[in-house]
Length: 282
Image (cartoon, rainbow, N blue to C red; front, side):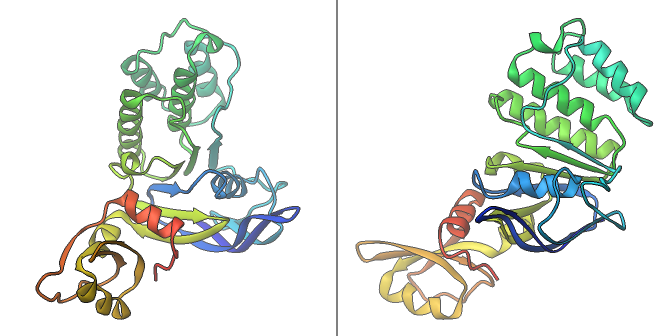
C-alpha cells in the first residue's frame, strides 16, 4: 500500500529523510516514533505528496506519488491544522458534503462524547479541542490511509486517553492504515500494533510491539559475569554502578549463569537506548 524505495528529502545540507526504504502493506495502527526533528513530519508529507522527494520513489496504492500526483486515498493532518471559523456542527456537515462515505454518525457521537459544543465556532475552542475536532473529522472520512502528525500536542492526560479510545474505535469500525507520529512512547504503545522508529532521517526499525517486548531485555549482575556474555548478543549499551553492570540487549534470550538476572526493558528505555546509544538493532 505504501512503499518508499531509497527515498531522500534534502533541505540544503540536511537530509530530513535519508535513503529510506520501507513497505507498509497491512491495515493497522502504526506509531511513527522519533525525537523532535527526527524526520517524522517530512516522512508523512512525502506520503501525502505535500512535498516532493529529492531522490528515490514513493508508491501509494500502486501509483507513484509526487506533488503533481497527490494520492487521493491519503488524508494527512499536520499538528496545529486550522479549520474554517464555522460552528462545530457546520464543519461536520461541510466535511460530510465534501467527502463521499463520510461517517456523520461517528463524528456526531465523538463530538458529544468529548463534549465539543456543536454551536461553538472553531476559534472559540481551546487548542486541544481544536485538535480533537480536526482528528474526529479526519477519522470520520473513508480514506484508506490516515496520517496524524503529533495529534496529542496540547492534550492533558485525560484527553490523551480519550484520543487513544477514539483511535481504536475508529479503526475497529473502519480498518485501514493509520500512522500516528509522536514522541510520547508508553501511551501510544497501548493502542498501536507496530512501531516505526526514525532518527536523523533514517528508519532504525519497523517492528511489532509484541516483537519488541519479547526481544528487548536487560541483563543485570556482577560486571565480571555480565561482560563476557555481551560478545554473543546484540548489546545496545551498558550502565555500570560499582561492581554491577546492566546491559541492554535486543535479541534471543541467553542461558544465564547464576548471579545474572534478566528483566523486560520498557519501551521508553528501548527507544532511548536505540536512538541515544548505538542504534544497532538487527
